[in-house]
Image (tube, rainbow, N blue to C red):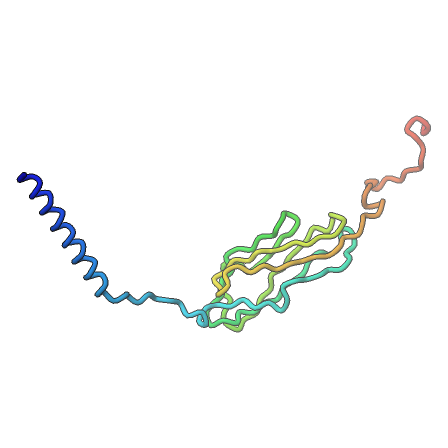
Length: 166
């Protein structure tokens, strides 16, 4: 009987302690959380974020420079830029602060030795208000001419087989 009273007493004391803690938590005021103000961050603003090459010659110039400006109030730092495949290579100012109001370029080169239509993206990571930005290149690479498709290594083919030349 004594054990039953002790157990019930412990349960009642525990319940009162838990309730007292819950009441104290309700009375606590929430602590303010530091929030970054979006208007004070770096901002990457592109003149255009899609470039259409139209039709490009096979092995032609597949490079375009995307111009952008830091329109924010803090220095902009690009930490990474990656093409959607190995045929698209971006060149960018790596870990160099771009001051507010300053302009820069991200050069994107597409391997034009791949005939047919293409649409490729470059993902840019930075400390901007929008931390990831995607730019796009697209176009059509014309088919290779037979001279480019089958190089002769400078030797002229007279049409004769090796056995007929003797």
